[in-house]
Image (cartoon, rainbow, N blue to C red; front, side):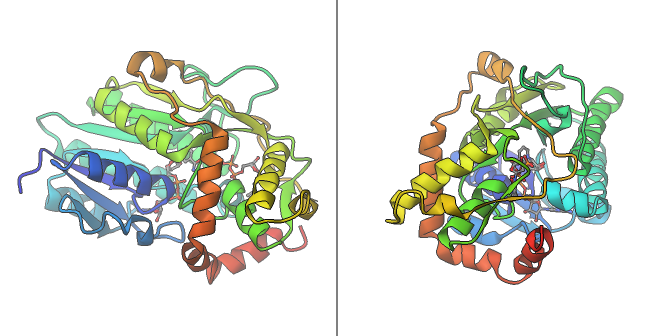
Length: 351
Ligand code: NAD
Ligand code: TYD
């Protein structure tokens, strides 16, 4: 079959990537979706079981840090567009070991840019780079991140993402590569690896394990349902202006402790536990080094220019998310066996 576009989605087996792949495979049968993923601890092909046999879907195992791997997938599939999500994504891991973040997030991104620049001599193309609001640094009690907010990354993770964003801009300005960028707030939803706050807390509540809240739990994050982020990527990829970046967020700020308490209440009800039972599991632990106080996004540009808005409330999204975890114990079991146990001990034992 002759496809209209052949879109390389990097990191398509990860949390957000799998939602993007699923959306594109189902919505654009005339486009081939090439999922290129190294399958690190965070990548899992089980996340895509429902689309793995689709005619317009193909999986290629590969590493963006290898320019050979990247060039060969471009050549083999005549890649016309890229949606780049592959990354090392967890701040705590970046504090323990920054170098994997430099390699994948910076070197890997430059390899993709280089391959796209060399392959795309004519015709219409898009290189959509998916990034984070953490590149803007940390907010005080007031204000929101705008697209014009100066970059001020403070963790090794955000420093590596900021660097990758700068390379994407540089390839646009220097070589005219047709790039688009999006910077999104914290996502939550199904298939989220239980190292991040929400899935870790859900997993520990189910298992009646301590709920490790860093510091006083007063740090604030702005949470967005992952499927709304995938819709935003679809919108920006198709309708966004070349060379522009768009902030994506839900205007949905929660302190960590309020959020954990809310989850406890919701899950006590769902699990038939007595009121307040899960809250007793809350344990305050040593704070994260350099812990950013507050993230909050202004997505007016995306809303007014391209007409995107979040589709559901946080309460609805969290309800769906908790149900997904309760109904997919096999998935949780698989991803939390083996190396997850070592990770958990290393991060949380004696903390
Ligand atoms: P994730 O950690 O769940 O998944 C990352 C995926 O990338 C995995 O499938 C992994 O196997 C793959 N990968 C890692 N290194 C690779 C390499 N060298 N070559 C090929 N594949 C590799 O991450 P996520 O939460 O889905 O985030 C996806 C993207 O969105 C990242 O770029 C992240 O910075 C960005 N982002 C995430 C959030 C969030 O809340 N999770 C918010 C804003 C932006
Ligand atoms: P996380 O999900 O790691 O996302 P990010 O650091 O990229 O925003 O963490 C969200 C917030 O939750 C952050 O303020 C750190 C805090 N946190 C805890 O309090 N306990 C935990 O076990 C984890 C993983 C995070």
